[in-house]
Structures are given as structure tokens and as C-alpha cells.
Length: 295
Ligand SMILES: C[S@@+](CC[C@H](N)C(=O)[O-])C[C@H]1O[C@@H](n2cnc3c(N)ncnc32)[C@H](O)[C@@H]1O
Image (cartoon, rainbow, N blue to C red; front, side, top):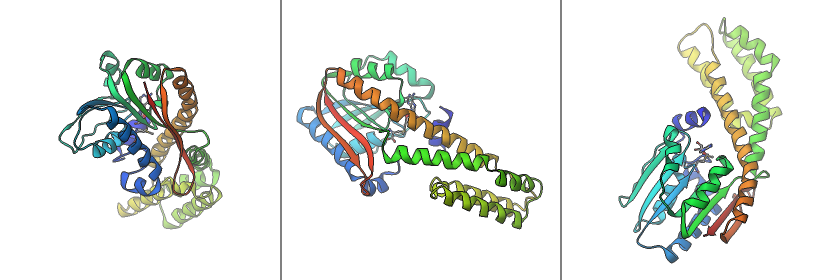
């Protein structure tokens, strides 16, 4: 989980797919779906209930639900194998977390939940763990809401393209030669030659290197060397950041394959499907599959 730990500790301040402010504009169908969940919940819910947020990250889903339910007492439990933590602004809402080394301890609890939610999350877990969560941790009449990755989504497409672009960056002979010289004597001409080649690679890959922030990271590293009047540059830290990044993209692709298994699992369990919808962003690109089920 090193690559998720570093993602969350490196300042990802909210959700995995972006911060709430930008998401509300670019992905309104996501929020509409959570509003549906809240409407359904309020049909049967008492004045308080328990909600399990699976692979919660920094609690983006808990936060969205918390805002929609200011007058209901909600006890959230967030579980995630990475080291994460979050809190909620609404005083009637509590959060208990099982994260990092404590993740497994959740399975020693025998709490049941009126609502289990997960956004781009449950499909990251081994399918046996998901089966346990859906079988053992949901109250009768409870709701399960899952926003899941898809193989043919724009997210999976971008992951594949970014992996290919970053791999080419790692293995480019011309960049390697210039980097070798730069690592012994930094000078502006060499740095320019490096950036020109990086820009060529970026253009060859439909600007994916810029899209994932790699070109900026290299420029910042050069600028920092110049500021320190260093006689050489060291791109180790940029490279290790993007090695982690590739691991996370691969994890996302594995999760989108596992999401198919998860949908099959759900179809075999005793749930009524209340809502099943493919979600698109404002550019009309397929983004995910949303499922709302009742036990
Ligand atoms: C795409 S992020 C989604 C986070 C959050 N639900 C959100 O919407 O922002 C995937 C999350 O799954 C977690 N994760 C990955 N593999 C996991 C596993 N095997 N068990 C539990 N959590 C896992 C990661 O740490 C990360 O927080």
C-alpha cells in the first residue's frame, strides 16, 4: 500500500478523482446519484443510523453524505488499507476509522450497518473481503451504494495512456544520456535540451505527461537545482513519485477488472436493485457504474 500511503500523505486533500469543488462541475451525475441514495435512505431511516464507507480514502463519500444529512445523527465507519484519517464538520456526525495496520481489526467487530457505501473503492478489496462485508455487515433492509470503476471508462483509458507515456519517459535513451551529463554538471543548455526532448515525448503521447504533472515536476526540480546553485541535478525523487503513480494506475486497472467480479457477486446475493446507472461526466465520457441495492 506504499503507493496509496504516499498519495494520501502527499496532500491529496479530498477524493481520489479530484476535489469536491471541481467534481461538482465536471461530474454532476456523481452527486445526483448520492442524492438518490439519501432520498432512498430517508424513506426508512430513523433519526440515527450507521454508515460504513469502504476504501474510504480521505472520506469523500462520508463528507458528501454528511452534508446532505445535517439533521440526522450518522455514525460513520471508514475502512481503508492505506494510512488515512479524516473528520467531518457536522457535530452530530461521528467517524471511526480502521486504516493502515488497523484495517484488519475491522473484521473482528460485529457491527451491522444500515448503509454501506463505496466510491471507486470496494473493487480494490479482495473479492472474499467484499463478500464478507456484503453478507455479514449489512442490516436487513439496509442499503448498499457502490460507485464502481469500468474497464471501458475514461478513467481506465487515461490510466493506460499515462502508463505508456511514463514508461517511455523512464526508458528514453536520449533523456537518459542528457540526464547522465546533468547529474555531473548542471548547465542551462543541457537542461533546455532535456526539456525539449521531454516536450517531444509529451506531444507524442497526447500531452499525457503534462496531464499527470510529470513535466511540471521536472521543471520544478530543475528550478530548485538552479535556486540552490547546485552543480548537478537529481531526478530520483521525481522518478520515485512516478513509479508510485504507475503502481496506483495499475491498481486502478486491476480494480476495474475486479469490479466485474464484484457485480457478479452482487447479482448472486439477495439484494433488490433500486438503481443501476452508468455515469458520464460533463464531456459525456463514461466514468463509472453506480448501483443502489436494498437487502
Ligand atoms: C480510488 S481511491 C478511492 C478513495 C475514496 N473512496 C474516494 O472516493 O476518494 C481507492 C482507495 O482504495 C484503497 N485501497 C486500495 N486497495 C485496498 C485494499 N486492498 N483494501 C482496502 N483499501 C484499499 C486505497 O488506499 C484508496 O484509498
